[in-house]
Amino acid sequence: YTFSLIARVGVDVGAQTYYEAWAKAVSERSSILVSGAITFMTCAACLSYAIIIGDSFSSIATLAGAHALGPPVPTPPLPSPSADAVAAWANGSVRRLGSPTPSLSATRSPP
Image 1 (cartoon, rainbow, N blue to C red):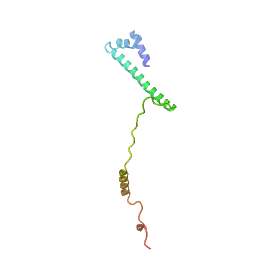
Image 2: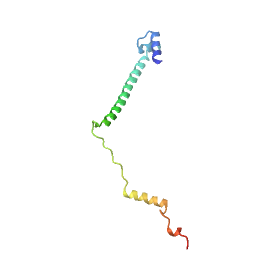
Image 3: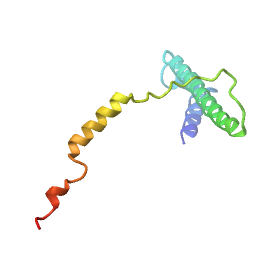
Image 4: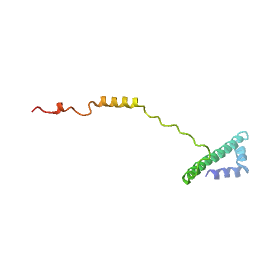
């Protein structure tokens, strides 16, 4: 509907381009903004499609066994807990839980 409406306005004002239709229907001074907006939107759409296509082909190439073109990016190793940290965590867990097994003298009934 939008393209049809723009075409009707162009026919009504006797314009051949969107720029001319805007200049005759709205204002000659603001018509440069319309051209800039259309150019920006076109460039942004091309960039978006290029990103999508690049990501798609990258995934397909990886599945096909292709290697990256640049040097591999090193990943930092995951930090491993020190022995002191593990001991402190275990000691704190035991204190919170109390004794892991009840004492036998407390559960025995007298003879």
